[in-house]
Length: 194
Image (cartoon, helix red, strand yellow):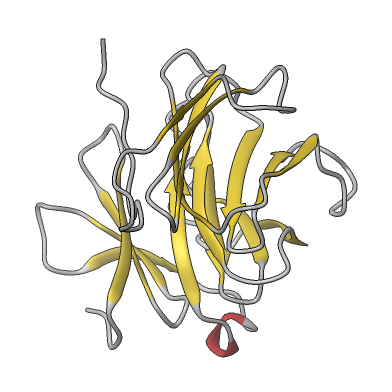
């Protein structure tokens, strides 16, 4: 169903799955059929290279990051009949958005990391598409991230193979630095559910 390589997948609680391809086409698939339920693609997405996607478990938000540093957020889960409800477009990074996560506790909080070394927290309910909640400059090329189920802690992976654990209430310094996979990059992170 996709003409380009799949770069990200996300399950919904219903068992349906979102699949995003490199050219920015996002489709919602039912595992009970071979046809997509609906498609999400803004008219400008064809020129953008999608790099990552996340779906909130506590709201209807679907967020996608792109090679040009931009973020797009849709209300994509609550109403399958209106597939292109684009809530906002925002440039968060100077370079590739390499990781994106939706908070498991805060329905409005989305976090991104990029190759520019920034960890950015975004309030999707803000009226201004340029607002950010917080920015942490790490000085490293960031590759991936994951929220802890408590919604307070986030793990961030680096190109150098490090994992930094942050308390989102104070982003000045990581709580823990782990030289986990040096010298290989950390391409994906996930917390184990307690």
